[in-house]
Length: 243
Ligand code: G3P
Image (cartoon, rainbow, N blue to C red):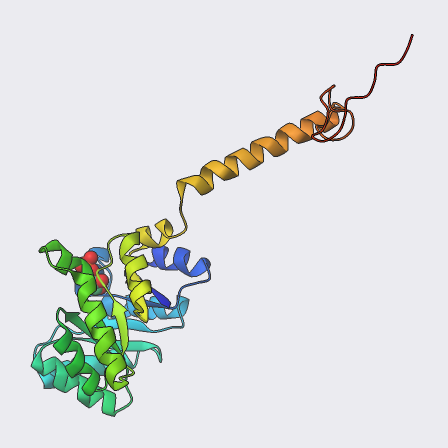
């Protein structure tokens, strides 16, 4: 499973890249607006950090305008993926760009037939928004499951990118179903390596280690034969010397 980070924040991207398991980046107009940075400059900077796919979204609503908007984005770097909305004009633009060998990520996917259509148009990625479906009392993961089945039935190579991931359980479910990729906020990427029992266990190991070291330095390490009078398990206590 590939892991993308869903952000336009350079600091978060650098920290995730430093973990050594980051495969790509997705941005969207909301994430870029939050950063207050020039869109093209920010994409250029992101592409210097991450060599995998970096999604750049257009904001036009017609085929011709989408293509015109995509052109300068394509020129930014080889790993730019053009992100288009799952509407009919987006579908047409997906076909045009895919036929030219340009990778497209079809976003704002909320039902499996949109995923079927964009796969037929040659999309590289489809982005079903799991969290936003859950937000309105739907079952976002059910859509991932349906798309997985459809793609496997017909051998579509479009990658399912589980998007709008909100918490670690979403990740477990997406990975179990077989989403090809997940795009994840930095906070959730951090949570993916956390468990309270790991922290508790680590603290205990370190405390025991320190105890063992200080006992050694006092010449009374447990199990060293000078165990402060306590026998090791399975060993008899030495008999006291006869006076
Ligand atoms: O980038 C697209 C998607 O991941 C957005 O997520 O949390 O805004 O629904 P969210």
